[in-house]
Length: 151
Image 1: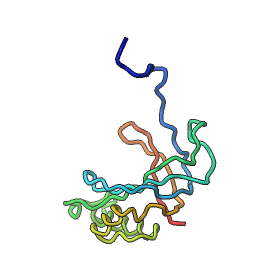
Image 2 (image 1 turned 45 degrees about the vertical axis):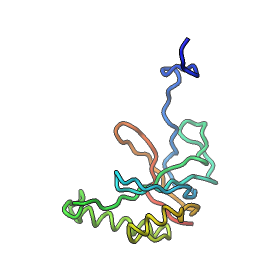
Image 3 (image 1 turned 90 degrees about the vertical axis):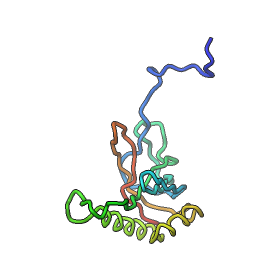
Image 4 (image 1 turned 60 degrees about the vertical axis):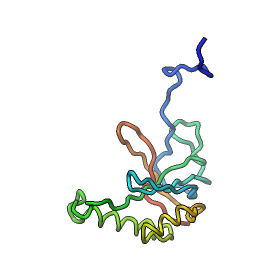
C-alpha cells in the first residue's frame, strides 16, 4: 500500500485543458496582478452571458477566465527596435499601455498610479467585451485576450 491519497492513471486520465474558441465575448475583470519578473500586468477576465462550450464540448465558456497582458518598459528597451523597426520597444509598450487604458476607461499613467490601482482592486468589476484567441508558447496552447473594451 502506498501513501498516495487517491488512485490515478496518468496515461488514461491526462487531457488537454479545454480552450475558449476564438471570438468576441462578454465578461468582467475579476483580478489584476502585477508580475515584476516579466514586467507585465495581467487583467484576468471571467467570461459571462455568452453561452457556448469550450473545445472539449463539455466545459461552458461562461465561467472561464482569460488573461489580458499589458507589458511595461524594461531597462534597455529604448535601445531595442520592434520587429517592424519603426519604433523602440519602449515606445511600443508605452503606446500599448495608453491604448489599453483608453479602451478600459482607466488611468495607467505612472507606475505609482498602476500599483495603487492594483493594490486597491480599483479595476475589478469592470465589464468588458474582449477578443479571445489561442496562442502556443513553449509547446503549450492556451487562451489570451487580444483586446478588451469597457462596456
